[in-house]
Structure formats: structure tokens, C-alpha cells
Length: 204
Image (tube, rainbow, N blue to C red; front, side, top):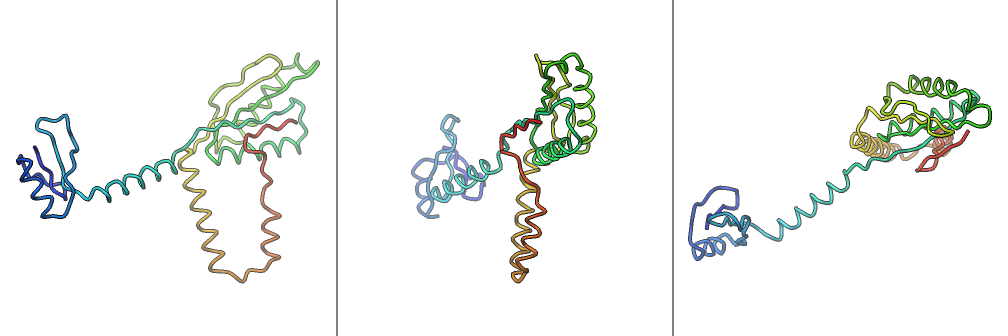
């Protein structure tokens, strides 16, 4: 067999008895790492430690795995300014989180004869959030609705990392300033944006 040392160094081709002797000498395990190679490749290692580190790496990879999420926001073509700003705020938050946003304009009655109203509204929204996202799917008619999909400039993994950093910073600040008044905490809470449901679907 071809033997690899505990630090990754090449020991060379040695008989099984010699490899087992070295494993006992180093107080390590003899692990076959390439059974199909000719000759087979084995390595001297602490197998228990190896399994533990592999499990930790897999756990960390799952933790950082980014799942693509498509949020949805519904608007009417004649939406009033206040409602528009509220819906735009939700779209901004979704894009900052690294999520895609499906924008649906719902036409009713005579509105169906004015598709240009929906198109202009979608174009306006895309321009308002262009620093955070881009048009991934251009506006298109779908029955009584008109649909457009916005994609975030920021990757989901980047958004997750920034969120974790911000959370850690808040914890550090709270620990460094334990005497902060309750009034300040309540004031900060009152200024926090109100979130829409996770699988956002809002109708104007």
C-alpha cells in the first residue's frame, strides 16, 4: 500500500505489517482513503478527531447554505401614495435580505383595459429600488394580472453574513451598555419597521 503520514507527507509504498507498526508507534489509526487506487492509499490519522471535524464542517456548510426564496407583493394599478410607500418598504427589506420579489399588479373591471397603468407602476417601483435590485423578469401580462420579478444585487449568503454581524454587534453593544434605559429600548423598538409575513403576500 501507499502510506501517507499524519501531516500529509508521503511515506511511500510499504507492506501492511509496516503500516500497522507505524500506526501503533504514532498511536494513530490506519485509515484507507483511496481503496480503488493501485496500490491502495492509506493514511495515519486520529480517526475520531477526523470524524468530528468533518461533522463540524458539514454543520457549518448547512448553516451557511443559502436557499433561494421568492417573496410576493401584490399591488393595484391605482394604489395610493401611502400604500405604495408601505409596499415599497417591504420590497426593499426583501431585497436587502437577498431574496427575489415577485411583484403582481391585479387588474379589476375596467382596469383590465388599461395595462399601461400596471406597466408604469412596475417600472416606477423598479427604478425606486434599483440600488438594491434589478429586473430579473420583465413585466408581462398573466390573465388579469401583470407580473414582474426583481432580483437582489446582494447574494443571499452575503445578506445572511451581514445579518449575523449586525446581530453580534447588537449583542456586544448591549453587553457593553447594560445600563441603557428602558425608555431608550422602547423608543428603538417603536422605530423598528413592521415586517410582513415570511411568505409575503400583500394586497393593496
